[in-house]
Length: 311
Ligand SMILES: [Zn+2]
Image (cartoon, rainbow, N blue to C red):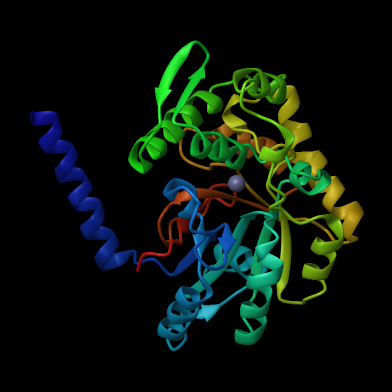
């Protein structure tokens, strides 16, 4: 009890200190998909999508008080904080969805706002992509009952489907790195067929159309969208280095930034940050933490805020 009071008191003191002396001076926003609602998508994956109208309202509300900046500018501002700059907002989009090109690019161009897209190179290399959350979603959506790994899952209602998706995702995230795809296919052997694979991500030609815009920065989101804290040390360099190498070779531009897949506290650690530094990145971004404050100087644990449809 005493410990709990002490913890709450400490958090209160940190919040009060931040509010008075250490206000956030920047926000790096994390998005995935851009576009209108898809009626048959499960809510758990639909929250990865933000409609252009929502983006426009947000931008209109913030434009007077914020600079919309590139990732390169975020790097500069964190490396060399100065007192008298306006607060900033930076848009980032993870995974490399095709709607980033078809819906996102026209929006960002119309508003003259820079943005960054983090590519998982295996998603871009394959058609149809092995984008397993979407494969799982279709499996859960198309069945009322599943048997996975000897266990029965009832998924008749939307609520049940959402809950089963979360349970199965948790299971999949704990699969070992080595042989991940085979383990995944074994787990869902009775349900996965090629038509379950949705072609949601860009190919390299589409990525080239995106980077033709000077507003777009391309970063890496690893080779296979693995949970980096699960990856053996010797493979970390591959996940981080090979995706960077491929992006640079295919696009003829340097790839200086990485966002870590999932990116929550349990998905990354000091070893991962170190491997990103050694792979030659200038900055790495996580998926949590809120706004960026004066004392956030760690360039390999740069915080982001999940941007959703809800205001
Ligand atoms: Zn991702």
